Length: 404
Image (tube, rainbow, N blue to C red):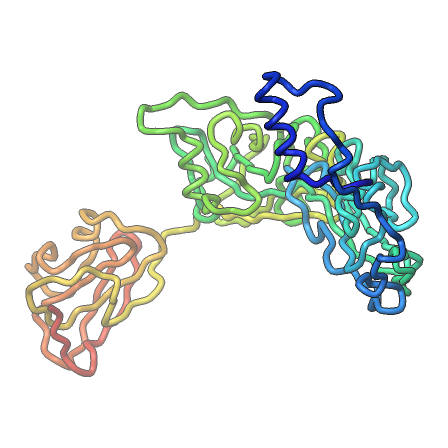
């Protein structure tokens, strides 16, 4: 390939084009142009890296690895070397086989070189029928410098399987969003949210509600989309209250998209109070006929409401709101459930006749504070919880505390 003297050609072009308004064939005298031809003897072979100067062939990057999100159904599998593996003429050429990369189980797809150092594989169809895949790079892989990898290199990645993320209980208008203290009537309606779109019919044989070995009969269906109450989407409430707002397995889906990941379990039977239960997703469960099956059982536990009871008492409670007035001999009664403030004033009894307890009793959350009773420092007195017939003999604390 020759090199033209651009300056000379430019001057000739200006002269002839100004006269003819266009460049006419045969009007340029090429005899004044210098032509340089490629001379193989002038090629500096020492400037090129050869097999003698190239270092060992290595893998510098590969992917994917670990657990793939369910949205990545057709991942691009690749490996990058530290040396050129093919000439530029091979870039982008589709290949149906590769002697360098082997994927197990076998996946139909296309191999391509993107750059002389990166080999990639693009599957023809989604890769989620199997739980795990391994990728092996052959030890016979050879660079254009003649360097072999020397030993096989293998890595693996997993396709995401079906997983339960949260449980909520009861009808839309009165959802119970915790997995403890569930009223028995609400415990019979369980909303289960998954990490991917799920077909209720497909998992009906692989999901259970059980109490130890006792499995309850149930129906599995798609819950109806609740009507908006004008204060926002009810699915926002489920996501936020169930601590799913930043869950890595749940994209920011709301409304219909969220409902497609949720099923309704309706238990056909009574679930007694003060009992522990579990929702089990059995091995083999699939979101749909084409998704990866679970290899092990998954279990989320919940507990129905327990009896209201006094748990303990103390002489201090940092969580209880502080009053501006000074308190004498405060005692804090801690219960298993939130306390109704008005009933607390009527329920706490003391052995002092004619004392109006409403001036001495205050409830907050699941605690009751009793203070400013007409007792002397170091004396002993008795408090009773009237409705439960529970008595506790309480002693004033070793030293008097002033709360502000």
